[in-house]
Length: 441
Image 1 (cartoon, one colour):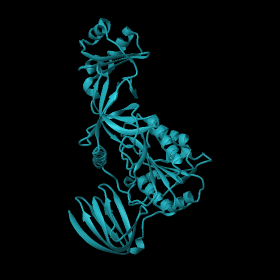
Image 2 (cartoon, one colour):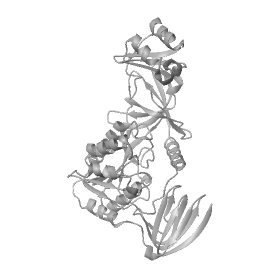
Image 3 (spheres, one colour):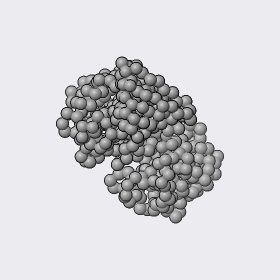
Image 4 (cartoon, helix red, strand yellow):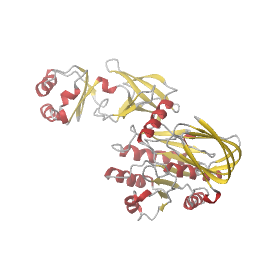
């Protein structure tokens, strides 16, 4: 690391992280609307770009790869006037305005939400932040649509504590459109119940393809925001603008995308998620859950009645796939048979599921689900009470015979765990390393 001291005389300092900025003297302001004075420190994360303007002296502690430049006073703060107009209109809207921000990756969505937050808070408003970017979340951990409430200015949305969350179970909305849409609506409702003066929704950069179109459209339909702010970088979301432009009850605005927005490398995004998960699970504990007392959701497993598979099922599997299965647990549902086996689930199913169709035909069952015992370990789960999410967990072991599920858990609020929602990713709570998995159980 290296450090440098700089003086600003009404000009702007543009910094690409990683970097720590220490204000030595003067009054400064960031492009996110945060005001800084002597003694304040802010961190610019790797992959992030920040502009600081005003008159004062700063010390930069530069990490590897960090760069900066100084603009003359006539360059001014790169803060679009239409951003300021939106902030003013939201402050004067009356009622509880809800603004959803839509744009592709690296278009400045989170910067805009942070700026609007600070502008509204400076006017004395309590602001609900719904963080729906499940892959690059700030308010809560990845895989969760989270709600935080801002009552004072912030440099980074990560400074806002999560009040409520809705478990999506994945770092991408793809394949999880229902969970994401329901989560956004639930968090907006919670924000209003908390009595906030305005709600801002930060969304993911998933904007291309059929699922992305459906996600954005149905989120708007479910929430019916008063305002939709579009950051149409290089025309990448013009199709979404056309889908939404006819809504009379929505103030739809295409806002300026700042030139200073920096593209974040995929590896930097992954490292950020790893850190978020590792930090989240630092305060973890071991929890044992009684399978007879909880509901398991978002999987076939746990929705049926245990039974002892007889020679017929074992014989059919062996005849079709050539595998003599070691079955650890079996459940029968009105629409499925679910088996947990010691190993060889893939061979039983066959490449591309080629054996499943014949097994289902012979057993006269709609769905035939087989999973290896090991596949259940380290799956990320949502832990819920009657009101919603109380924490996240990582499955350590499921003792089907003893009727017990052991999880490594981090709780975000008090509550009795009544529901376990299975996710679509595995997480190491010690390191934060993670991988998406296709949940077939």
